[in-house]
Image 1 (cartoon, one colour):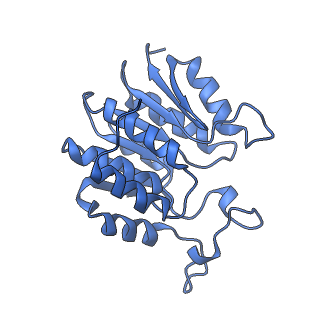
Image 2 (spheres, rainbow, N blue to C red):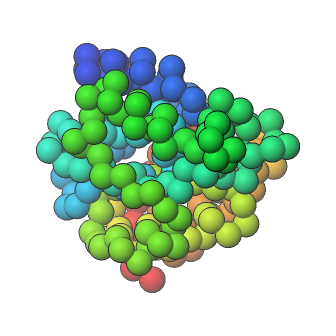
Length: 215
């Protein structure tokens, strides 16, 4: 039987599930379990794609218990599938002054509500810019960014850059059956399995791999 979540984690889960996002409760619990298992590895936790902070709150709660930082990276202008005419578009996240999609303010408010601002270093920018400033090692990387044809490959490039042997990589929205979801996250996982990673666990669409070699 899985261990019962701590009170802090339960509070984080409650806030996370009230925040716009796509992680389900079981996936968030698995994310917390995997991130906790990575705390013994050197370096921060890294999140590629934070949106409004559903996964960020959970990862930051885990990081804070070990006095680690979570580095959260997102351009906050909305991934392709979050913009019109796609059904995941959230009109409330359009800035009334600029008329542009902007999820940064909601992420900041979410972290303020959780009391976790000091545990999160936010990088506001694309994954190409992030790749040029991030330095290894990282204890854990979550890939949950855009589902277009290019973004996931840059996310994987960052993971390869940051994770040493024993480092943990989680990928969200991985669907083997194309009828269940988009293909790029699945293709990214498949590529990682050919680039030195091995399967570790699976919870719904959240796949976790461990780096076993450096190709």
